[in-house]
Length: 228
Image (cartoon, rainbow, N blue to C red; front, side):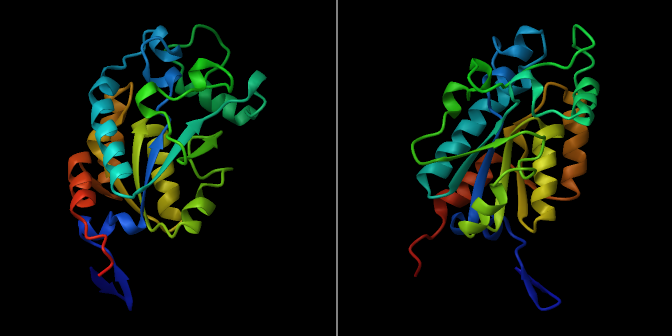
């Protein structure tokens, strides 16, 4: 910890992800995005990076659960008939998915009541874990995420899930703008576009604290939670 203009600033990973003030945000680990028979997998989108990151994120999630870290699952949601999408959002989605769309219409995915909206089996929330539905890339925009974090005295968010350059980076940036410390376990985030993943990691490395899932979990598992 260092002092900057009379304010104490966390600098070490042990301080940043202390389980007493940290939340794990698990972003969009849903059937449509990461499972081979979900929408994107059925369209031939490359999911190989998720195959590598999923087991590591499962380990991080289990460590959070075992060590008293607040777990919040973010769930991408698109209302039926695209009622949650403005014209600008339609344009955004058309550009984002341009390489594999089969028509001039935006893709439809993660609609409530469909299998694609559900979390992949190993990421299903346990009883008592919080779920925040989001309708934009950032988990903060139009949701109660900030209220939930502040209500539980969270100072740091560990942001993991998918996609690196999309919902992960958008949520991380908004977390910083809302005055949370941000830690990215870079082996627990992934994308269907390795080039965009690498570009996002490069940008985030100069803005946030990047670590690994194992290093974060080690802090949680060795933290002194006795309060003494």
